[in-house]
Length: 310
Length: 249
Image 1 (spheres, rainbow over the protein chains, first blue to last red):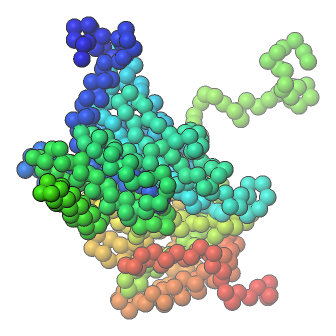
Image 2: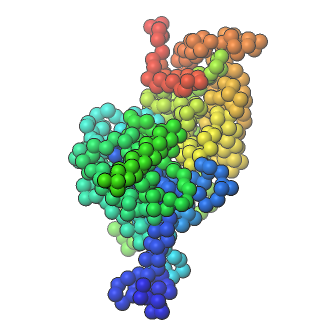
Image 3: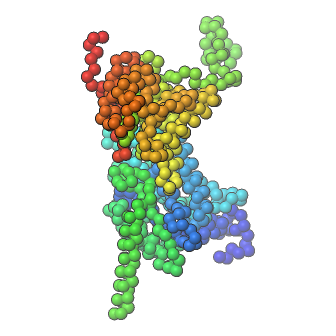
């Protein structure tokens, strides 16, 4: 970096003459050192996985969770500075709760991503703060079933004004990734970020990424995600869990000397295993996926060895 | 229209008399709920061997008017507790949303220990007591049903003053006068809980609901009934009291 001594990186919100914001770029560097995190949007759910490097043998296995639940239907995992990630989650929970206070229902994943994107971006604007040293993956399932309004006591009219629209469908999986600059992508097929509640075309599901990866092993992880052909919408949640585990194992290959724990969570459709809630992947299922991941890696090694012998 | 702009758009004093400003004050003492508006009547509950059953009718009255006839007054909390609400319906909605936010926050921690019905009852009774101490009570009388910390069936009541009371069978409102004597006759004090079957408890509540439908003018024949067992909660919200005979009226 040629900026050393130029002074354009001394304060937030200061551009260099060639249009860069160095503080934000340094924050991205902090993310690039963090354990790999991936998210996969499947046809019937979303899965999150993170490579948790064991920094001390004195820490209890399975403690210090890195994937957090927001409201009931959203999960957030972040790579980079862990405390920044925790603050981010705390803000997400506040946003979800305030949404309920106003709209008496769960916040759509896209709306949550939108608000969090705005929040993170604000931290690039002022000299009194620094940008978030995290890239967060926000995964959620917006209920496709008609939800009761919070506190609703009756069923309301079945016809006439205030009656229900037959066959109106919405909901589905959402996967968003928010970077230190506040940048996040939505897919153009989803409704606008702030009002995605009703989808005129039920065959188009809510959006964001098909697969997202961040942290140290993101390049390897992205390469693996691209092989999955996620845009065709064929991958099931059960297979998604296995793939996520495998991808974390693949991404870990470059830092093999360090031990790690795999943490995984998922959100299924309302008629799936988690009933639209964000939950930790059950231990048995995770261990099974980890075994499969290790087998797949060993298989690759053998193939390579065979080639060498030839 | 006259030359006093502050009088424009207001009823003319010379036609309607001076406006009584005591109706809309911006200063002065703050008014709190001093009586409920839309109300639900009795909540009934019976403990049986291995669980609890709760029942309410589906009516919300506006004074003596039977205003809303599909009001669900049994609210599920988490996976193994139910709160049955008598009294003000808007305060019930407030408490329901409060419980929802608590349930969401409980799930943020990973230890997996959820609030049980006993914890919930303690908490709600303290919410009631706090609000009555602010002279702004939540106008309800509730029954909380589920399991306590030892996994035993739990049933207890709390009212708008924060008063709590527990018994193997309970009823709020009119039911406290009409249903409790019936339940005491069916399940006497000396009868151990092990001898009360689920079916007997459900049958007893149906009988009480029928008596209440006959005698309580704020009741109706559509009701909700929830059975809590170790297997989970079985809630039916659109039941009808059977075998009623009002031809003699």
